Image (cartoon, rainbow, N blue to C red):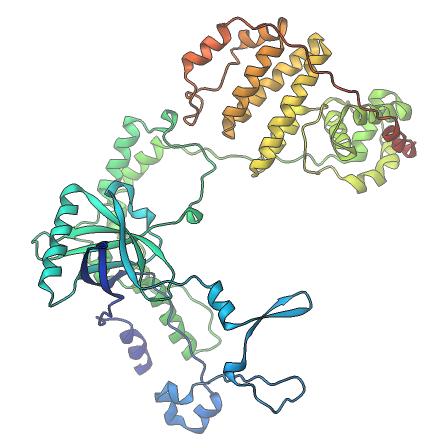
Length: 548
């Protein structure tokens, strides 16, 4: 139809370029070239939709051919509170910002002070190797800068600069403000020379600022453990060779001949809704699907290479462990059976509370964990008693409370639960809490506590590697070597729990030789252990008397 022809023809074709920048490329205060920049590539956006008056369209059908004639214009005027008929002039208006119940006025001079003033410029900051500005650094649209027409000296000077950059594999880092008052952009200008040497230009690449950079939470890919093997590299090369866009597929994905699938789908849906306003959104027609799907013949030819690639890079499904659904009252009932009835249950609660320095909630969670692991099945009467006594408490505290500190009941599980959260501050708190629990266990001096402390130290080292806290662990282990002696350090040496090295994580500076010598060195005279003041829990234990 005529409407389809209008929609599908207006957005396809060659459009005239408008210079995005005309001015000097300033290399130094005394050297510059007159250049002009044009858009090379940018993110395509949907066309601006304007409102039209239905009343005007019905009144004058010929206005349908001219959207401007039926356009809706919005006019706003302001009046004083005491006189609604009086209009305030535009030059008498000032912006106001809400602060509590008041509006604080900002005059025009204040607004100008608040805005960072910029002037149009393209000023070179320095030169860097092109490898330091890879394509994935690009943060926006790309421009092409050429010498301004009619200025031979600028053309010859810019040509010499481009060829020198190309020869030395260098790029220019420049401060770019396309218009006076626009924001400042830091760009890289890379030289481009066509194969026939007829086209010489600088291609811009918008660079990110520090606030634009996002740090990855996983380990560096430079770790030797993460490097692919020879067979894996061959599988990737074979699959890439099969998927290369040859001459038979060039017509499909050449940028100059490939339409934007987003815009094509938009125009297709507009036509569908114009024909039938109640129609559902349908799948893309084959003509649009070809814009973002590879050639089926090429995929079929690369099937063997894809299977080989999948066999060399095996994926394992990570099954998340389900949280225990065991009710808090059932756990108390089971603990009562193990401890000897209601009196035993109260004693168990008080013991957990006195041992934990993390508050009532953590004491109850620790009790649930201990009961779920070690308790045997309770009888029906005992379970009922536990449920009746603890029903209210379960509603208060719940069994799925997030662990906020490493307790003494089950420090390893608390440590693992805190590391599972995506919060670096919680990770540091978990490491500090685990170190404190190890020190407390060593103060007991019994063989059972030393064994538990060794297990905690092993888990601490593992968690420090996973969360890149190797420096904190190494510092703690060095201090621990000075404080402890005898059987516990002998057990550390026997298990090989040494410093975290570069073999464990590439971010660590400690070498394997240093870690090995650390365990072999003689232990220095142990310092006197710090005296820990016992915590008075008498007042807190009285809070549990209401559970009788």
